[in-house]
Amino acid sequence: MYAETHISPHVKAVAPARRWARDRLVEAGVEGQALDVLVLLVSETVTNAVAHADPPVHLCVDVDGERTRVEVTDGARTEPILRHPPADATGGRGVMFVDELSTRWGIEPAGGEAAKRVWFELEHGDVDRWPAPSTHA
Image 1 (cartoon, rainbow, N blue to C red):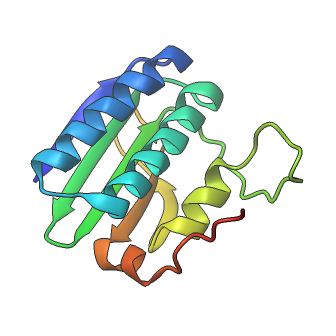
Image 2 (image 1 turned 180 degrees about the vertical axis):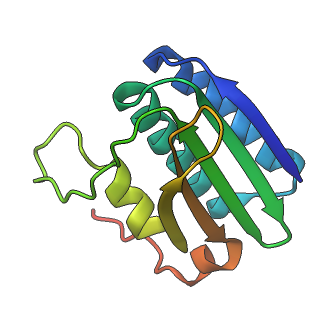
């Protein structure tokens, strides 16, 4: 299943983009922890694009069996930076989440009106191998 949409270049467009992506992923049969991780990473990459980049912004979701690829293209030539902010920081974790939670990711030049493409892939089975979250009483 492949789907794409245009994203308005405003921070208020993140929630509708997240819902759109979730709906497409569910339609394609993605569920459980893989769905949760993908929706989080879509939210982070779209937030970066609308907050720090130039229009046009597009979101593409491609589900192929047990793998999902997400691409966010925008008009800015500057690349997002992988940071490891301190625990008390209020931002700067988006690319770190993509780096730690996706199977693979990257940044590449895009064609047409867009300048760059930030993409990530998740092999759905990868999340099944993660340790269960610990609970603290």
